[in-house]
Length: 383
Length: 249
Image (cartoon, rainbow over all chains, first blue to last red; front, side, top):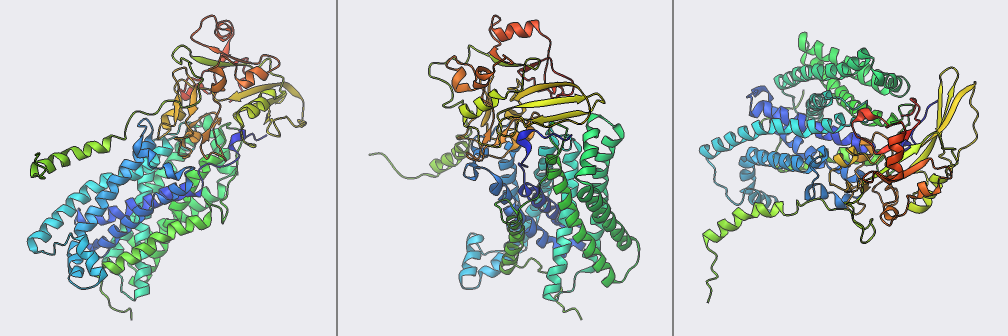
């Protein structure tokens, strides 16, 4: 008979804690795409370079939101920086997050400085805000632009390990909890980094197509092709690692497999095996393989890439769900399981999650109204 | 009259010192507040606990005493009693007295080979993983070996609840902070017994000072064979289980 410890009837980390690593993953992934252009000179990614950095910025702004909603005492949130307890991995959050936010803001500022100066020369509130943003210094020439470019390159270089740290740290939080056999694996750190990159590229492809469609822009084909190939490569690594993790436990048949196999069979068969692996990993894998290996019409290739990216966005969300919620369904008695599904209207429910996830897109739109995130886009109407 | 002009040197000095101000709030973690009795010296004791599973009769007086003493919210438990019934075919049936701190009569299918009760509580581990993972130092171990939560400092993140291998912590729905057994710190620092130990009619729960070789607990631990819960976790629990069956996790 199943037995759950009496304090484990309720799941402690709710859908908010599913959302938190999901959003930080989008940040890390989007940042890495921007760095592929700024640092590694992947010129074909230029059309989305600013957009990706802007996306990283707005998602980063909202990354702590689910945590604040979740905390029992959000008004004490700054205790994590005022009295950090450094034996805890979580104590690093405030510092890692702040450092990364400063870096992204700085990089964005240097990337946008020319545009801000151009907007600052007009009249009105927006122009005044732009003047304030560049500290009322409107001078620029080729030399200043070259310096800006150099600084952006350096910041992008520092940003990559920091993006990995920000998101790998989230994986480490779970992977280091030895009390939970579903979480406790050193692979978790790496899995989180790769799945972050997958989700970041996916959200950029998804959003780029949507924005282009709404505005009647023609998407940049080499850019989309390149992102599709990167997505294919990174998703192969991410899904392989996810599969390796469970296969190694299953193959070793250690004591914990007894209960983990039951967890998969009884609780996670649909969300983990059917959805995460078979539908939302295998299908995008084949789709992206087809777009990468075969010569297709642009229209067909675009459609397939968008479908694969959208599916992978869901795949990573499912992965977060199966890790965060799946691990908590397993009782520490190792004899039974609890259950969880978020309510719609409750404080940590689906509506709150949807609002937190949607807001960054709105802020990104406002941001785009201020300074164009697609300066080089070919604004030709699709015939 | 003093020259009050702001010089470049003074500004630079100030700027150089400014980052130091950021470090000011990062002070030592606050010690226990408001739990121990006045005049109590926590360096003179090292508290431990033992459960004699061969004696427990499953009356759950301990659970009711704990709830009354510590105002534990309904549906949450600082301590509980588990009932094990192991059938002849080896199947294990476990439940707990979660219904109003009493066991509900429930028959087990098949023949029962052995049955026993196991009281559970915080293990007050020597290397407590809950204190380790607390990001703000609100969960901490006192010098006399008791793991406590500073409710005025806890942010309610739940990390300690996830990290505890024994499921003994919960998020208090009234204080919105982590909650757990304190070994009735407010009582033991006055020389009293924890409420559960006081209430146990058969002496299945034992409490004492591990620093004192002549304490009842120290003597029992010298004489009896005991086990720890999940020793592979490396937490070094200070709750010792006498006569524990291998099925108990």
